[in-house]
Image 1: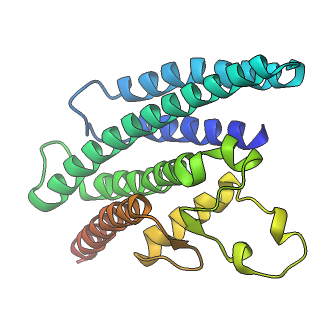
Image 2: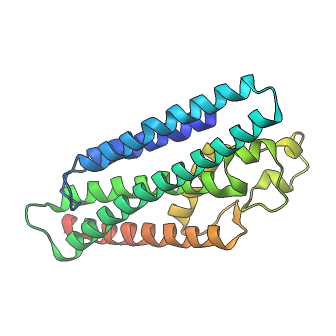
Length: 224
């Protein structure tokens, strides 16, 4: 249950980051993205809490089937919310990269640099949410079912350390994977195994490379 609330907190972080962008980087009012994210997060959090409360009182196979159905619906809603946050962040990334390359009225180089770093950090959180939501069927399935096909190969999965047989990755493990991919532009200690995760790795690394490369170039120009 704690992992779910940490992930929900990560979505609140992205909403806060969207709210503190200095420049106007979206086609809609600056506050709308944050409001939409929080508005979608609230019922999702309520549904998650209700589902976990039902688990404690499940007494029949029918109850467990209903809980499993609700979990699938919650996971789909979480993926939709993550996709919306991704689209919002990529749209902001496009605008800030265009402004860094060609300039934009009413902006300064320093403010664009801060916004670019904001978007880069949001990108790390967003892809951590993607990884957490899709790996081996999502967090709920990983807890109860040890699927033979994994989307990631974590170091613990191939080690003989005590407790490694029962180990399952938590949300922070996916944050670490996302952060290292965004900084190294490639996998580090955790390897992507499936095609969908490899595509996500490429998209995140490409966005990070564009942001870091242009931010560095703009920083040199400002200092010059």
